Image 1 (cartoon, helix red, strand yellow):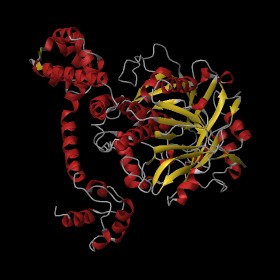
Image 2: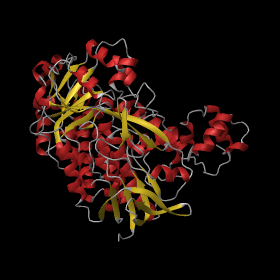
Image 3: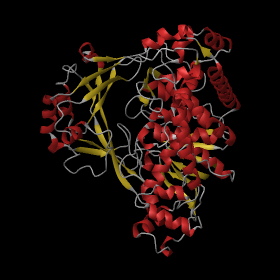
Image 4: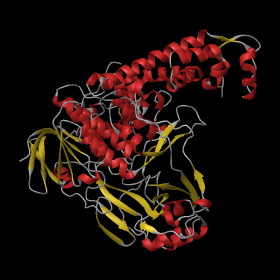
Length: 622
């Protein structure tokens, strides 16, 4: 009944939607199979995109030609740039989103992709020919042939939902679990494990007293994620902040014996950096309160997401404890929080392209690889979709390195180090984060994406124009002299030493707290330059970052170049580490299991010491 496809994507979460669009936009006939076409790219947990390090990933997805940034902008109800008090490596965009609009916009875009088809069904197994996947079979008994398959099953693989002493199968509230895939992969020799995540209760905003909470408005001049022509918000909805207290903690603690987290019902490992409220109370017993973010679910709904109150305790306990919280005294609950356990596959079983090492033409992306978060999933989906297409074209895989993108850090961490708990991206995971800023994602990545046929000509032209304008402005600021009378009052207002004589504008901009946009009205030549060439805020920002951080950026590039030298020393999959007697036993074990592709990757494997690397280099004649 269904035709043969180049690519089949299983699952229409954030990873699946990006994978399907990437493969189809590059020219592969693609089929997206999902159990519910009404919930494509569902925001299963909080209605937000971006945040620390995650915002950089969304910008990178956009720069590569993905859609998460565009849809986040279209469905946003609030925008905030986090960490502006710190350096630009830490600036992280975040949107609060309308949950319904987000899903609707994703479906609208998916249905405009010419070479993308859809099928609503559950995939229960894979079709194989030797050690190569050739299609899937569904719960309806249908077999669909394809040249490649991408599994993006999220939390649905043998998913089990926990609320107090109750548990039942499900991949998400109100949706059934997916069965069959884990069993198929286990039979093929794949290692699998169990992870756990959770979500807070949803409550009725009409029952809350926002007046006694702390308001958290959006930025005064909101920006946006996408480098395309999406529009920044002209109006925004506020979020609010409140706190738990000792009374609420006591109510929750009294019910710990009914918590599946503590009574042994849950076997999977939960996210260290996003613990449930009962886990926080248990682990941080000295804390008298914990911060809660009260977040609206959209423009035209009273539903509220209680960020920070994830729980799997009985629903009556959750409600009783919430009523003790400031502003929640009369709270009404729409549905309780719950925990969910699901299967994942340790990601060391993948190549850097996200193709599995065991079965050819089979790719895994998203939470099935042990990650948590929409952004991490979407990034993996995009890379898997790109590489599924390139594989069919017999082209080299598209692999981003640690100095090129947070996406490169994410995938390298997963494949080299693996993960035994839900992996979440942080800026601290990236050793070259000053190079991987959110503001330059298009400069870093759009030319690479254009080269492989995903980012279009218009995107590339926009990046080239941005780079040219930035370079011109930098040279202009390096040559333009400013006089003391024009800028000294401003410098003094910033507690910066006044000029005693003419000085180059670039040198003035290198000072802390001196902003180029604040100098514009004080330096007429600069104002005329910006006006005549219609230079936008992004160009001014790039120039200012250059002057303030050029020394640090140069040093970081030098360090990255040293790393690249090690990445260029290749290791083959069939390398026999057992014959190198000078290697430690742990190094032999880890190198044989992970099969690093380069010396650089080998250096990042836990248990492989510098002396082990020296042994490898000597053996290779380096």
